[in-house]
Length: 330
Image 1 (cartoon, rainbow, N blue to C red):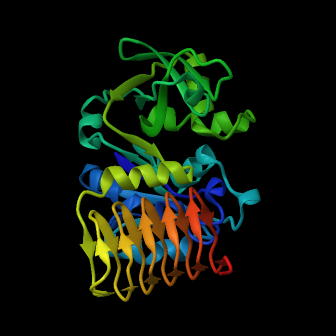
Image 2 (cartoon, rainbow, N blue to C red):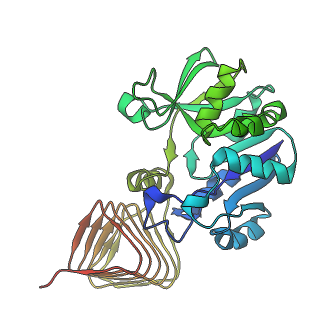
């Protein structure tokens, strides 16, 4: 079996944060999103990452360090991209027909992929999670089960029949992988959910692996910050400068070269990137990327991109793009 991590999206829902960086390489605590997936997948087969030409350079060092091969589609912007099924088809054309474990590269989940594959018996298997809310279920592919068998699949339905949703983890046998090109030639929507619907319509048996605990589709600032709170268990503090009047409340991640000056409070649940300057500021439940300057600021449940300057300002539930300069006058 081959393992294929899908990392070719342009993550428009998280722009401007992801306009210049791929979502799977966003940090969650001390690791990237994709690192959590790789740790679960590494011993299960050959691991490949599908991405696009625009983000290829971002992934190259990571792939080399981790011994992972990149499959690169020739797209440079959102309007050109292959959908997920098209990207799978392209990867299979390079890697050959086989059984595939396919994982969305912006997914964080609690279950073991090894345990998931123990339930795989040569028929399509999808991982499902109960979001517990019908309104929330409308955003996803909704699954109806009889026992472990999928009897109905609704992609982003207006009226969901259940709150069980598909989470972007699929084990597909080579016979089903071989059907993908027929699916695309028929002009069907290039999305895994619609492909599962299409399989069911053709009498293909699809099974579900149900899990509990946690699942995050990192598609919004809220889900990103919630994932940080769930997965950041202990502090990781590198070589930094810190004032004796400042306080750190764990857990936090603070990267090298950062200066915490004056009477600042960092944490809990804060990620501070490299070479930031934080002076007389409070940061909690937030992510601050490299080279940002905060002076007299209060940051809560916010994401601040690289090389921003924020002075004398309180930000709550905010998303600030790179190189922004925001300040309130005295």
